[in-house]
Length: 310
Image (cartoon, rainbow, N blue to C red; front, top):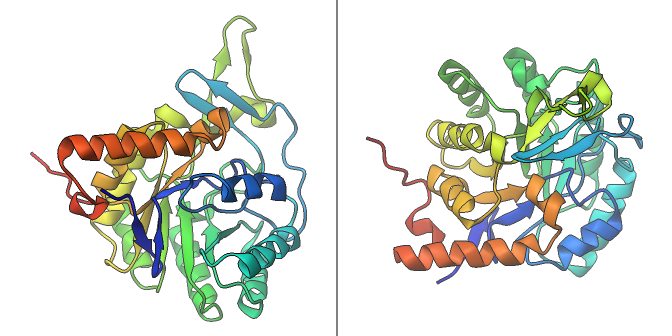
């Protein structure tokens, strides 16, 4: 029995990672992920310059997950690239490096700097941040997404994945997959939080986060069915070379098993990692192993993507 997962020509001990934005803001948090039982990890989605993000309170745990409107707080591109380069001097396991520029030009500038650097890991281009006031999610504009990817791959030759928002229409899965299949992407990460939910404290008769009058991205148990649908939709539509990272609503081994059954290769944990801390990786690997043992599976590849329909 093994949870080993092959991704980007590297074998990881297990498929579990943090979701970008959770437990990865500072080098201290990143080192804690290094030392955890996560199979891999990713840096905070960064902008070219440091950002304070939205006013607090901007994150709130709710019974079925979380709501947040963080607004891309981060220490800036150079901070994370310095960390990544130092990490690679000591480790051979690939690091995932996330960028989320405030414009196409900013994304291209950061990608150009990564291209020129010694970074050997995997870059994730986040096209799906729903919590920056006045900045719509690029990935809901199919034409703009295709245009940006054409510009990206005209200059960027290193491994690249993209983080997508949830889609809710079969036609949109078809349209986005047709665009993505044109490019040499390493992976697609699906999904980011479901944008612009609203949670109310009935005692106070008020919203629970300050930015955007309480509107924020939903994560956790709320989003798992949507995440599974998106993972499955892209697994069945994208060319086999483009792997899927499944993100959304993974709280236990059963949730992880379902994402893998839908076709995910790696799995990212956000809300539950925020609630439990890095020790979650100890628990969730054991739970997935137990499910696989009960079902008689020795490897993840024996069931990955083999979801049955009626």
